[in-house]
Image 1 (cartoon, rainbow, N blue to C red):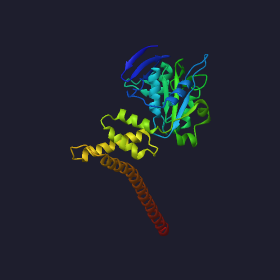
Image 2: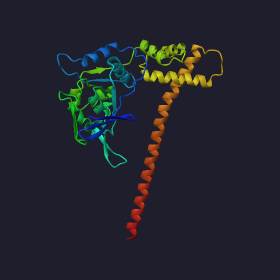
Image 3: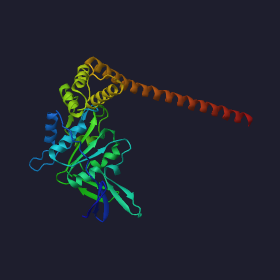
Image 4: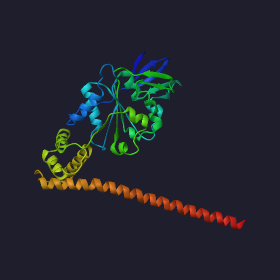
Length: 314
């Protein structure tokens, strides 16, 4: 097998075909906090005992609570390359296996998916937002996630056997897990299903102080004192605190430090803006939808009048 680096890909000759293999994902370098029990469960699922193959677990829970961060930490702990596919409604089987592209020399090169790369190199494959993916795009996973641990790209005409060190996991939101759920053949092959809930307030505090060092500690304490009885995801906490602090830096002309009361007012104002923004977008969407419907029905009614008048003339 011949290897050659090409930008963010590695060109590999496989069975007389040129395949571009993507490089692994860059893992953020920040301190991971909490979730010890979940980390323990995930590592146990990946443990090989007496020659058994590792399990392919899935994480589920509310959005923004750190499922991706958990997978990053697992890759750091195991010191393994990480490859990610983000699921969406337009994803097709070739995106999960191998797609094709035409070069400037009118030759075909095949572009391997992150799954293909992880299987080839023995890395970790993470299928994020798997619940948003059409079933047809998940079909190539059937033979990857069972004892065959292999994948066939019909487009490229390549059958790939997974490296012995290949590991796999997935993630989806709680409403997808508890709603329609995953197709049966994927549900059976991505177990255990590990629930990831909202972090403890103490963990959110430590995460904010670690990730937002430019924000004084009093801001973190003010935020959490007002939201300690609210299910606050890590993502929302970072967004809310960051926005409130920016509002204060932009609009505050005082040189002296703000009081806790003033800080809470900025946080409340930021929260109102964020929530109102959501509502404003919904109202704008509904107004545009109504306007479009009225325009459509008006045009339709006008066309009917024109059509009727033509029939009258004849």
